Length: 145
Image (cartoon, rainbow, N blue to C red; front, side, top):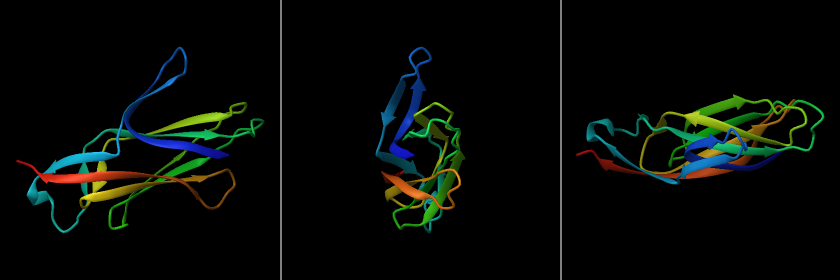
C-alpha cells in the first residue's frame, strides 16, 4: 500500500456524478486573533475552525478487503504532541485507490509558530505505524481588539 498525498484544506466536495474530488481553500498558514487573557503559559487553546485533511492511498492488492489505519499526530512549535486523531478505514475489494477525508472542527494551539501534522499509516496485521507524510502549518497570533 502506498500513501500518495495528504492535503490540508477547508473542505472537500465529491461530485456525485463523476466522483471527482474538489478541494477548496488549501492552506499552510492561519492568522488567529486571541484575547490576551487566554494566552498564558503555553496552555493548549482550542481554536474553532473547520478543516479537513484528505489523503490518497494506492494499493495493487485488489483481491481482498484491506483495513489500513491512518493516524494524525499534531506537534506544536516546541515539538510537543498536542493532538492525536486516528481512523480505521476499509479499502474495498477491487479498488486500487482510496480517498480518506478526516474532518475536524477545532485546532489545538499553544504558541505562535510552525505546527506539524505527522501522517502515519498502519497496514493490516502490522504492529507499528509508518510515517508517510508531514504537513506544516504556520500559526500567527495577534491580540484580539
